[in-house]
Length: 128
Image: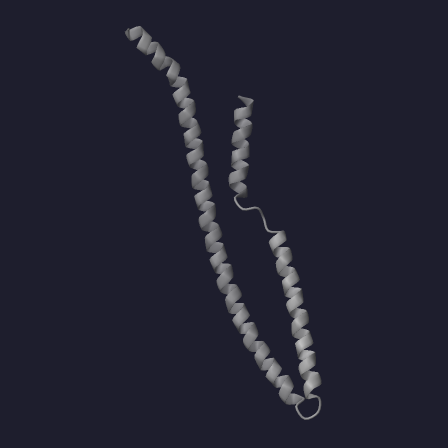
């Protein structure tokens, strides 16, 4: 009976090692996903903060510029000056919107490093 149980353990040894290796690989990949999520979160928070600050400062500058131009042309071409400022702002908004859309379309794939590692693992298991 000891011979049967020893042979069963010997048969389960390689299987257990393979299962252990697979779980180890999965654990490593999940850790990589967690690291990538943390990095992406930090990057997005930084970009969001800088974007909000830039938007606030640009808005203040545009308000001051609008007031300056309106005051400068108040006696002669007030409505033409305001129409020109409005057209420039609308054009700038369209350009920014198009660039933002392009940025979203051309964004890199999230979890690219993790996907690459999964592909390497898949190739490795396919060979063996």
